[in-house]
Image (cartoon, rainbow, N blue to C red; front, side):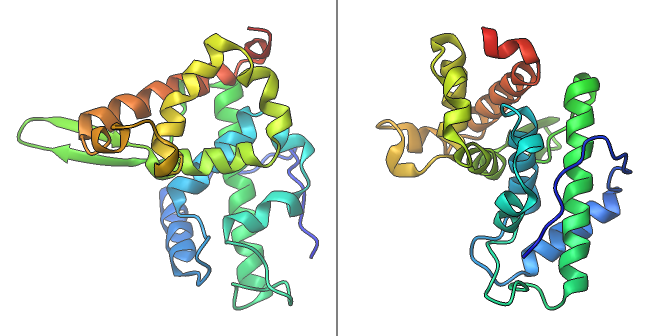
Length: 209
């Protein structure tokens, strides 16, 4: 199945809030177990943007099917029609470009799509980037070799710990980490810490340490 490649030079409008909600609903209705939700998709696309050229060098067919859990033999699975699949592809590519522009040109305005728990009485809120980090790790898994120069830098690689704790497999976490992650404040601190790392990675000079 042929898919369009990401073309950063082609301007597209950001998805509206209604379009983001509709995309989230479409992804939630797909039958594939591996289909991403909107938070995981946002993390996945962010990983493509800040990764070492990944969004610009990977073919669309190398990563787009991961969004919905893979294609079937007919190329439609899990979609009901070509039209539905095309609509999702276009929306995903639009959101990818929105993230690309934001992180490269307006990083202070970048807002990741994540869950937020609120305590209105205490006027507090806690960010939970668990699904978002899982998506980001999927982007890294597409080409671990490309990430190696960054992960080999001790100071920079240490900043990936929050990502691995929130998005990695439970059995790979250090002893006691899973219990600590039950604390909303811990998850909030880890989430915000990795978002700071994303802003570092968005700068080209990050590779040179």
